[in-house]
Every structure is written in structure tokens, then in C-alpha cells.
Image (spheres, rainbow, N blue to C red):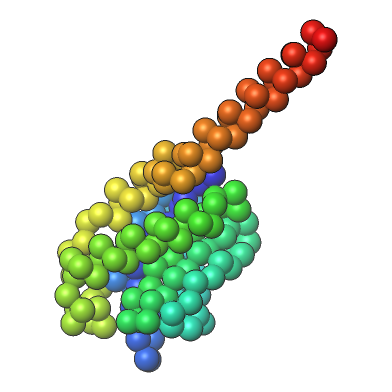
Length: 164
């Protein structure tokens, strides 16, 4: 499971504006990193442009899964991950990021903002923290513990049956 990109965008009437983004392209070769980052930026803008306000969706693009959430106030978030990354965790992350962003950045700056002018520094922290969804998301952590308990119980049951 890998989370590659986390972006905050504004869905304006003429065009979509990238406000802030964080990328983890360390798994790509040095020479591919800039083009992969450009691909993720372009894909994020395109998906937000084609999504209606107030919607959440997941779009498969090549071997990536792009999770997009466009709020009714035109603020949008995109998380690009591999196919194994849980959708529920991605949408929980997007909702959290957009809520934080809207509380920290003035709404008047959204239509005219750019990554250089927007002062929001939490994206990199969220991107690194959510690399392991089981540790970052409490529900995923409980689900993982429950799965481990099921395996242990099944082994105990099998060993008890083997004794009888």
C-alpha cells in the first residue's frame, strides 16, 4: 500500500487551481520523478475539473487509483495511491485535510492562490503519516487487530480438533 500524492485544489468556473500539493515519488527512479509529479498534478486537475461539486469518487488511471472529493464550496482534494490503498481511509484523509485547510486558509485566497502563496504546511505530514493506513486510521487498526485475532482463534480451534 502506497500513497503517492495529496493535493488541495479549487474548482473555479474557468479552470481548476492547484493550491497545495505533497508528493512521495521516492519509489521512482531519479530521472522519472519530475515527470511522475507532473503527471500527478495534471491528473489531479483533470479529475477535479470533471467531477461535480459535492461528490466523492475513485478513478483508476493506469496502475494508480485517484480518490477525489469536491466539496460544495468548490474546495477539492485528491489522493493518488496504488490499487491496494483502502478507499475509506483515503476519503477520511481527504475530508480531514480539506477541513484543516479551510480553517487555516482564508476562503478569499482560494480562487487566486498558488502553491507558492498558500501557507498550509500540514500536507507533507499527512502524506507521510498515512503511508501506513493501519497506523494512521483507528478503524483500520482495529480491523487489523480483529483479523489477527480471527487467525489465532482459527489456529486454536484447529489444534483443539486435532487433539480430539
